[in-house]
Image (cartoon, rainbow, N blue to C red; front, top):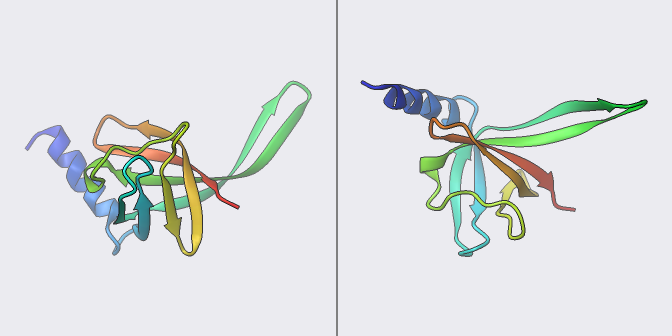
Length: 110
């Protein structure tokens, strides 16, 4: 078994509903297709310092197995959206890890 197969097995374990995965309705803006996926969604406290001041707040991320999506996740001018727990988010940035997963930086839609 090669490294990618081992990484995929680990990714499947982490995203499963019995581990950290949560049921999410993911909509691909370009196609209008909505699909249900299971992935861990996490909100963390972040602080950015620079110069004489700093800013802090919360950041929300989704770790998604790319094979669980029918189309690659999209950010930018036509970002994908997702709904988790009644809250809608849009994808601000997509950060693939090279091993079949991507971290999606999310923004809550108000």
